[in-house]
Image (cartoon, rainbow, N blue to C red; front, side, top):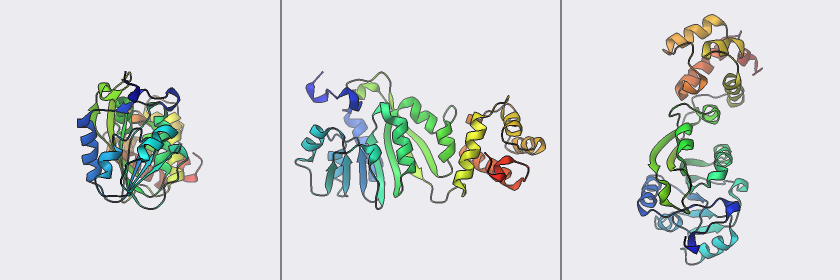
Length: 264
């Protein structure tokens, strides 16, 4: 392995080297507007083509040696910050967040990003299974269900592990996240407590979970499942973003459900 791609273990560095994937990411970012925030810039495989878009770019790199080397020779609209991205505060209007996310901090990075304000679109290279779960393919995760009313997740493509150096053990996936212009739900905290209760509640399928864990009256749960054309033994991971929003709306209208009283 070339010393150029000898990433530091503690930083979880697997560098993107496939020109076609780099071009694909650049095209996705080109379709957005406004300043660009790049996370995990590394040696600049994405930074350099992004700098040619003529938009302000802020590139974050935790490795001080690579950050210093990357800053040399870039155009003036590019700012390189030697920071831990998990402590970076997003300010102003960011059109796109883009990055090859270190696999060992994927969940932490997504939590940081989804809690950050002032950005509209994210183009992220993550593990393939993470991309699928975040987009609800094959079943959504708790994290996705909690934020789905505010963000839309799409898997753009699968990326072979051989697109990286050093080669990781799993393939990657290009995950595109859009902030919804109009949220599907307004009362965020209460909704997220409800989702957590349903996901962690005991029961054989949604009808039993909703009645036992979330306090939804059995007739209400039965009628809602029928309206959504869901079987009683469907699981929380099987719901779409729109179904979660519809379920929460039903719970809020029903005074007998614990979610309405804010107890979940």
